[in-house]
Amino acid sequence: MSKDTLSIRHNRTGREVEYPLLKGTLGKETVDIRSLYKDLDCFSYDPGFMVTASCRSNITFIDGEAGVLLYRGYPIEQLAENCDFMEVAYLLMYGELPNRSELDIFVQEIGKRSILDESLRVFFEGFHYDAHPMAMLVGVVGSLSAFYHSELNMKDPEHRRICAMRLIGKMPTIAAASYRHSVGKPFVFPRLDLNYCENFLNMMFSRSSPNYIDPNHYIDPEAVKALNLSLILHADHEQGASTSTVRLAASTGANPYACIAAGIAALWGPAHGGANEAVLNMLATIGTVDRIPEFIAKAKDKKDPFRLLGFGHRVYKNHDPRARIIRQTCHDLLNSGKNADPLFDLALALEEYALQDEYFIERKLYPNVDFYSGIIYKALNIPVEMFTVMFAIARTAGWVSHWLEMMDEPNIPIGRPRQLYSGPDKREFLSIDER
Ligand code: CMC
Figure 1 (cartoon, rainbow, N blue to C red):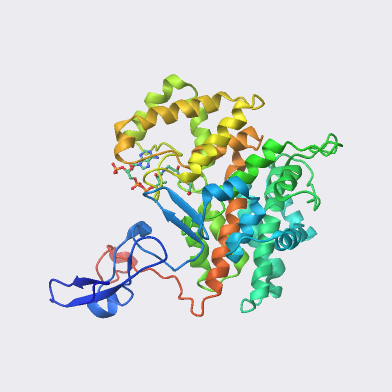
Figure 2: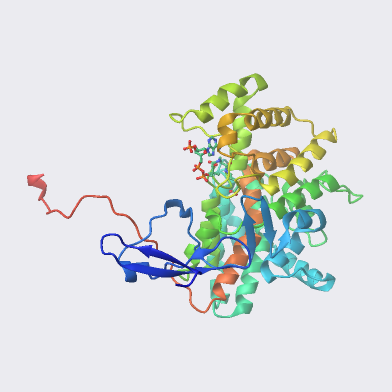
């Protein structure tokens, strides 16, 4: 019997089948049970995909026990320290870091695609002033499919590449437009002379007078640096719920803009990208350090649905490497004096308290990246409702890279899980008078 297999024995029928163990470049062995139904006439049950690899991918690797995150093999710490978000987006899309001229061309191409079609821009007028920016984002990104569908031959790699660039290019413009609409301010057009982060901040905060960028072209480098870091840390995370949603939607051959809109919808929930907004709201509800024990007790009470937001992760069971990096930036930004915020002190006190608590220690619940990212966004004056939108801007680079990778495969099986049915047994229909 080969050692690179795993045997599954059906104890009722006595039938035993050997399944191959697949080995990737890094990470756990993975048993290939695709023929389980044919061989043993049963399905596998794995709600929440706790142990199921849904695809092969070359993009991102996570070792949850060791707290390792690699984009295309590069440790997140090195990318966060040295890169501009555009370099990371290029790396995720193409698999290699760009040289200077490749990067220049990429940045120009992205910039060229940052402008919104006028008819798309007026879509915002259809939203009520208090619409959540994520609701606008999901709607407007989905609507891109009505504009560029005819230009998209999914079999043409160049068409697919343009589609990916268009999404990365337009996402900050749509995001900033959602914010401007919600505060009743006119849209600010993208500026190609600014870098990705500067341009976003300018579209968010420019006023006819004074401009966010003053006549001396000053833009707070600390703000740009912090935003750039946050975008890099959120750019990809292998098969998270939103990326899996993009892949599932794409497996049907759906329009890519609609697939990304599906990813945005999945991101929105507080268990995923919505956590950063939820953390800030939670801190505001806790209010003061003396109330921390009360909320920790709530989080531990199994009868109470409350969870300590920004704590825990499905994959990281030691520490979230993104959280380590961003925590330091949080400190730097807030210690610079410009952005002192009592919520940050509260966050640190909460972190300290939870990390000493047996419940959190036993379950390996550590602060995740979104425990800190909201605090950074707040320091940049980005409103709380925009936090998950910020995550979406960053993750677009990951989503489109996964979509491109998937579209390159010769056979794309439709994503169609099975189920364990537990409803009523087959029964006879009763007419309305007999019921
Ligand atoms: N507060 C209190 N208890 C928790 C928490 C929490 N934040 N997270 C997990 N637990 C408990 C959970 O009740 C369970 O306890 P027990 O074993 O006694 O039943 C145990 O820890 C294991 O939890 P789980 O629900 O099986 O873990 P999961 O891997 O399914 O969930 C999670 C991961 C992120 C959804 C969850 O930890 C959570 O809801 N955290 C808060 C939301 C959050 O911060 N999300 C952002 C994740 S980072 C951004 C991203 O990548 O999307």
